[in-house]
Figure 1 (tube, one colour):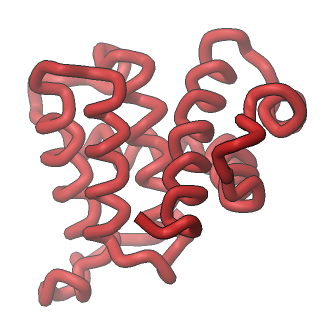
Figure 2: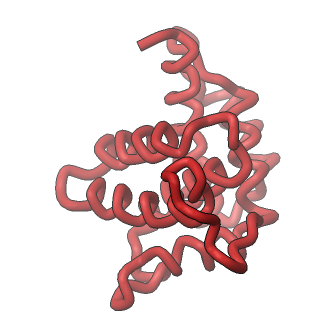
Figure 3: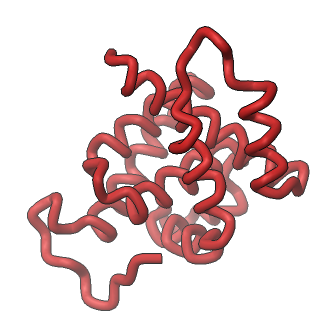
Length: 156
């Protein structure tokens, strides 16, 4: 894996952890970003701090729309509130990237966040993340999958 790809992967993992911390502790994005940059980013492993910051700052202002979009991609018997808080953080970060980072192919976003789910879970959770993100990507980036853009589908 290239150094740039490793740095971006580390940024995504840190963003998921930061979003999780923000939800549980009620901390603000700026406070959490500062803490991560100053104290949590390992000195010997590169982390793309700008990418991390973009995700952590980008999710909160759009969290209502993100949650609605993610919830719409879950099976009918699942509510987003029932989903484990780490999984919610993974899905929120990925959903933000699918809309805000069009320079990154949807399949790369999905693969990266499924990999992060594997970092936290050994059971069926990575498959759950894969299924939800695949549905979301086919809505938000339909043309990348050779599909027509669904009517009424708006970006957040």
